[in-house]
Image (cartoon, helix red, strand yellow):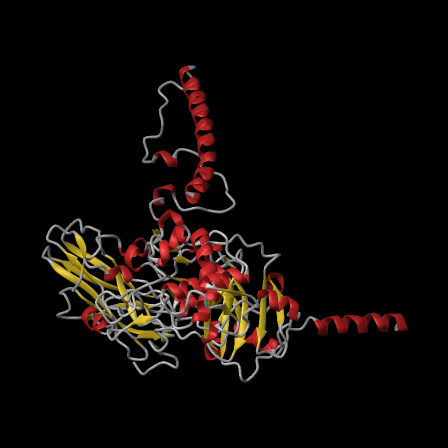
Length: 424
Length: 180
């Protein structure tokens, strides 16, 4: 709704422009009827209506074309209108290309809605097992030397809709879009920990948000001192509110939930706090009834975004298969594509494979002969981990587990060109 | 020409030039401001399994039933049965079945997490609104619904961490990571 209102606002100048142009047209007609130039007529040259009118004026913040309005995130609201900000908004990955998710379409998992934080009132507190408990204003954080990195964030519940009893016939993003990739800029967390004087007995950190859930997670110090970032900017601009404005934690490659948004507090501890979101949720039930806890790293994974579920191939002939691959363990080394349900595999070309823990775009030309087939992709990362087949993945867990599904995704192409989500 | 005044000006220019040189091994600006113990106490709401940081106060399941009915039941159902929000009671013995039911009683490994989460996040429409006594009481009630504590057992900073949750041993830590 908010987006629509914004767009309505930007459309208004167009309406006044039309009024102006109608006036202009009337004037021209008047001039012609006055016999200014006998036999005068408009240029017969090609030119669409928009080539014959003056364009829209400048605006302060650009929006996508009005013809791209249907490109929106998909909402999952498990509690409905009772808690309309609890759940997730999934990126429409099937409508996007390249590796960067536009900030306004970046997937967004929130537990108690998006807080409206005044950065002047917000502060980040570092305390616990540190020599000097300290706090930072947002302004102070913005003064630190920055680093910039491109990384994906994937909710560990991403693709849990691919565990539905029957395959959902919805767009790829509505199943697998609970992940996105952005360029993040901020401060290495270790810089702030060093300033506070992290004590040797501190082995974990508790990170906590300033949302009304005060969402909190325990993080091993090893990760904090490795590549963790206090992120302030996303894709060149300050973080969006739904991405943690004014400051979020970024733990490259680790499950999205740990990348605590609206970060207000980090406490150094000598063990995990066992918060609600690392015990009752984000733990992975196994067939024997025991659950894996602290499964931080996101597994190697890929998905074909084009063609994908609910699309239709309009003709036989040449297509480009395009998709995304990523791994929480590091770089993507290889993506193979099968156009025969996994019988044979062909290496796709990769874009972005030099970056660890970031989306890679894979592409492969494909000739569709008009026959039924199943399209699949299979990623391998630099640690030689290979994306598992669906059956192999399912065998590791309880039927009730809905986290860390990185199994191979299958799209079936029918003789009529329809593309459907299937379990293969 | 070289009056003392000129020399002083040149010296100032040289100093200014030095001050604007890039610093190759500069240290971060260290803009953190000392936080007082009183300030930290107002922020520090996380409660680990040891119970460290639990506040004064106390409550029983009997007292908590009233809090629950007023502030929790609309979302979590009568007696924690769930719907529309998560079920809080029942499900014990189901984790290894084809249809596991995860509740506070069947799944949560630590009682301290219950206090921590209710205090920081519940009720959804008014977090941080319950008194510590009410949080202890409603925690006691949810534990009692699951048959874990008696109706008149007082939950407080001393007793709550001693509660042994049924699924305490149901978790396998994946950190440090297994070889996969």
